[in-house]
Each structure stands twice: as structure tokens, then as C-alpha cells.
Image 1 (cartoon, one colour):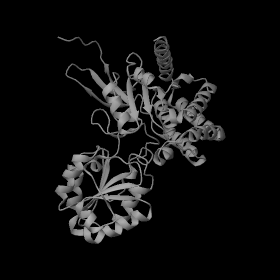
Image 2 (cartoon, helix red, strand yellow):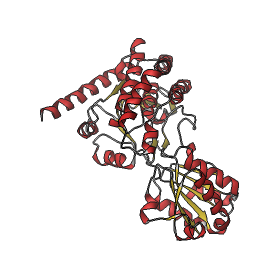
Image 3 (cartoon, helix red, strand yellow):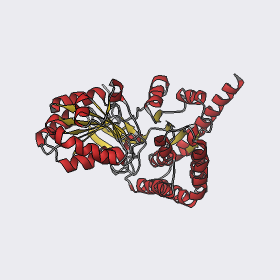
Image 4 (tube, helix red, strand yellow):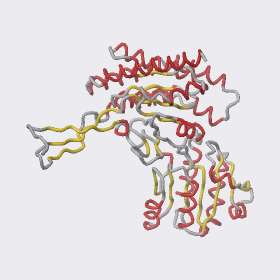
Length: 420
């Protein structure tokens, strides 16, 4: 019991330090915040060897993890350079803080404005994705928010190395290094205590698999922005062009199968299934993808493994894809809406009306016509980086950049008005 109290006291202390740092961040100019981002980016690159050494410790310990999980955990010099480049791109983005969305005059002559302000202190609970440490720190810092990070035990050495580098870079600039803090204790008990840190955290964002996200959503007392597990679909319409369908499906599944915007399901119209499905299946098989088909798909490509009912809701994060044959676009839309996680969905079609119907009727944060779901990413959307991909509808939806890390307050100018 004494240990539990001590842990909670430490979290409270971190919360107090974050609140103090938040106050300083509010006084920094946009240029000062950009200078901090540049310093953190340079420090990441300069400390590449130390970060990779820490990452190797985590990889050495990752003996019982599946390949897709190890891929998310693994850093390379190129991936560290990408993290640094993301920080530099964030620095180039317009400052959201202090901007006025709109202003108007009411009947009493008051000038009323709606101004952007930081959320305050952001908590992030995430799994084996050490890039989150850098991305979340960059976006939080640029938007004037302090951040408390709690990663998984599998990436703890890497996360410590990255956060130490970022904190040192801030301190050397005279900025409170507690703008970025990492919780070193990776136990479930401390995670649960962080979810209850209502006096210090303004919002909590989980990043990881469906199990983690649902645990945070169901347990947290702090307001949560739900980010997405990705059961993403590619629908090949009867008016699809074959080579495009092959290229997009292979890219969406294979390019990086361990991430949430990778496609997990292929839905194909029966009018083209006999011709197209063997070609698409062969291209996927060449990339090592195991296909699990419904009865009709297996009849067309007998090498497929019969799909079970559970397959339609599964996020594989692996070289596995389930295939369903449908007789209409309406059936495809109904199936996708019944089984998706509201993340990213795509239609391949040359028919304008079918594409527009898909856009309007699919319930997801991102809906594509003739493009890979792999583009659902803050970097690709021009946000520099992302704090996560929100699959809920309140406050934020889709890739969350700077704008989504702000709230608003009303500013009112008067010249002596009193209400009658």
C-alpha cells in the first residue's frame, strides 16, 4: 500500500511540474516555440547512436512479441531522421494559439471573439511506438501544451532516451524541461492512476491496439479522445480499373501492415470478382499475405483459408487479409459500416455516382476514392506529425494536428455596457 501511495504522489508531482511548465509555455512567442522544436529536432539527430543503442536493448528483450509489434518498436537512423523532420515541419506550421476564429458585434455593442487557446496538460498512454514520444512532444509544445507520456514496457529504454534528449534540448534554451515528461513506471497500476489524474491532466489520449484504447475509455476519469484501432477496408467496385485495384490493395495491406491505417479487409463486387480476385490475390500472395475468404471468395481462389465470423472484426496488424464478395455497393457499404472501426475506408471505382455515394454513406473519419488508406497520417495530411487519429466525433476526428490540440475562449470588448 505504501508503494501505491508513493507512486501516486510521484504522478501528482509530475502533474504539478507540468502545470508550472504550462504557465511558462503560455508566455513563449511562436518564434521561441519554433526555436525549441528546431533544437529538439537537431538533438534527436545528434543523439541517433544513443537512441538506437537504447532501442536495441528493447529489441533484445522483445523475444515474445509478434513481428508486427516488433516493427512498430524498431527505430533506424532513417526513422529518427523522419521524427526530426516531422518536428521541423511542425515548426513551419502557422501558430494556432491566439488566433481568433471569428468576431462579431452583438445588440449591446459588445465585440465578441472566439480565440484559440492551449488545452493545457495532455496525457498520452501508448504502446510500443517510440516515435509517439517525439511526435506528441512536438505537437504539444508547438500548441503551448505540456505533455505527460506513459509508454509501454516494451519500449521503455527507447522512450527514456528520446525524452531525455528532448528535455535536455529545452533546458539548454532556458525552457522548463518539464514541458515534456515521461512516466518511467510502466505498470498497469500507475497507468490506472494516471487515468484518474483529474487535477492535473486536461485530456488523455490513448494510442495503441483496441485493448488499450478500450481500457482507457472505460477506466479513465480524465476526459479521453479516443484514437483508433483500424479495421480498414478496400472496396473494389464493379467499375474499378483492375491495375489500380491491384496497386492500391497491395499498398494498403503490405506497405506497413503493422499500423492502424493498413487495410485489413478486401470487399469486391461479384460482377468483377471472377476476373479481378485471382489477380489481386496473386499479387497479395507474392507479398506473403495470407487471405481468408468468405464462401464465394474461396470458390474463386481455393487457396484461401475460410474466414470465420470473428475475422470481419479483427485488426490483424499483420500480413493477413479477409475477403468478402458482395452483389451491390449497398451491400458493401452495409458490411463495412457494420464491422469497421470508423477509421479509414476506400472505394476503387471509375463511377462518379458510386464514389460519391460511398463518401456520403460510409461512417469513418477518413473516406477515400481511388487511393490507399495508408495516407491517413498527420505527416501526409500536411500536419507535420500527429498526436493520434481520432475515431470519435466530439472535438476532433481523423488525424489530430495542432488545431485539434487547442480549445477556445471568448474574448469580449466593451465600452461600459451593463445588461438591462
